Length: 180
Ligand SMILES: Cc1cc2nc3c(=O)[nH]c(=O)nc-3n(C[C@H](O)[C@H](O)[C@H](O)COP(=O)(O)O)c2cc1C
Image (cartoon, rainbow, N blue to C red; front, top):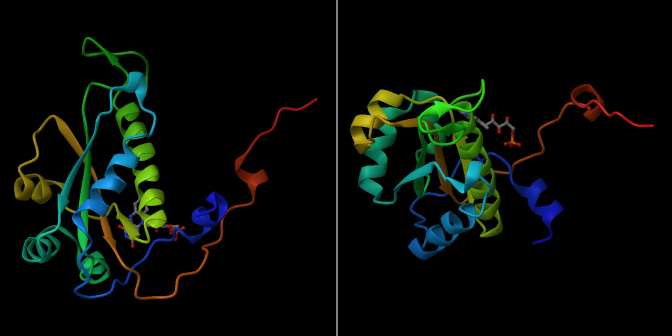
């Protein structure tokens, strides 16, 4: 797909087609493409926990998401929980290289997830990144180690709604150009 079209077609989808499994190899391919994202010293701190089993999926959604997000994700075909390993990106021998510290790990994970949602769309899939979730419950449900910071829960599936562009700020309100 042409890149600009892909970027515009990728929208947060909040209603998914029921009982529509995603081919496992397609998910693997999307996750592999996402691994091509840049990261600090190529340390690749991003981690993924992928739930494909429909029963586990329902249980997970019911236990870890607030009601609003449960309703949106309920028919998703898969869920990807994303995390990053702490004290890697932005650190040398466990000492932060600058004032951002573990925000660099979050930066790397954000880049990885940007690649992931675009690769998903290019594969005909839709996504919803959810920041409203219960991190503690996710950690115990998936047994995620304490040295990983849990970030988003990403619903993946096939859209069952029409989606529209959401307005973006004027470029000049968020950008400073220094030109001759
Ligand atoms: C870090 C992050 C957290 C988000 N959390 C939620 C969420 O909990 N629930 C939700 O419905 N949308 C959530 N979204 C989706 C945003 O609302 C959406 O990306 C934004 O409105 C722009 O719309 P678009 O993705 O369709 O372009 C989140 C997006 C990001 C990047």
